[in-house]
Amino acid sequence: MHDKRPIIIDCDPGHDDAIALLMAFACDRLDIRLVTTVGGNQTPDKTINNALKVLSYANIEVEVAAGASKPLMRDLITAPEVHGESGLEGPALPPPTLKRSTRNAITAMADVIGKSKEKVTIISTGPLTNTATLLLTHPDTAYKIERISLMGGSCIGGNWTPAAEFNILVDPEAAGIVFDSGIPITMCGLDVTHKAQIYKDEIEKVRNIDNKVAKMVAELLDYFELFHKKFGFEGSPMHDPCAVAYIINPDLFTTEAYHVDIETQGEFTTGATVADMRHVLGKEKNVDVALDIDREAFIRLLIECMMYYG
Ligand code: RIB
Ligand code: CA
Image (cartoon, rainbow, N blue to C red; front, side):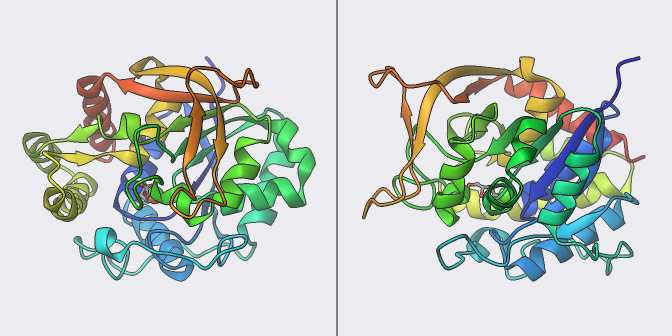
């Protein structure tokens, strides 16, 4: 029996974050020791409340700790256009029964990593402020982080500016610290998440699963679809679930190792993940960039995970 893989999930729920959380907790090979939250899709007070509500609704018991109140050096930008004023518009979720941790995310992350016998994997589905702050304040934790599987970045242009994907744009300085850390990184950027779309008929399959969590997820997807339809998507990109699915089954993905830098100065390009795809600089290839996915198998995995809550 393989030991379960120690995991910390850092997120900014957010519709796709919520689905990513539920996928992760449905996988019996993952030992999720901590959930941390950050401002991004909505303000920090809303993202932690959303995490608590989703986890409570699914009867999941885990420490949930709120992290940074703002990016390292910039004002917070949020995405109410995508996720609504609450950050989780759509389903009417009851107030959470799970209480937020009395520790802040950084203290909790350092403690969980420090006390773990094995290296810990971080799955990050929001801006990277918490992980960067952890590395700045507890540098030794870097040696005990197995891999960071993150949703963020893009080699095909941005979704919040022409150059930048939202999670990286919110805190490019934090992203630079993480990408330069030497920790193995899998970047699930728009290159792959735009291929990982869920379509209407598949949302109905989720809705028809006979448990309340799956039906709630279908309502999340209904709302999430509204924004993406406006922008001409046929389906809804399952951004954050990709970062979880990579850890559950990396064989679903095609990745290439590139040297990736984060632009923090450009007037038009700040927040861009600059991937040296032709290796012209000859620098260390610090990131495994996900470029393709077996979409059908990914959606089957998502649906299977939602059946777990029956
Ligand atoms: O660009 C998509 C990313 O930004 C996703 O993580 C979504 O939840 C938002 O945080
Ligand atoms: Ca997110």
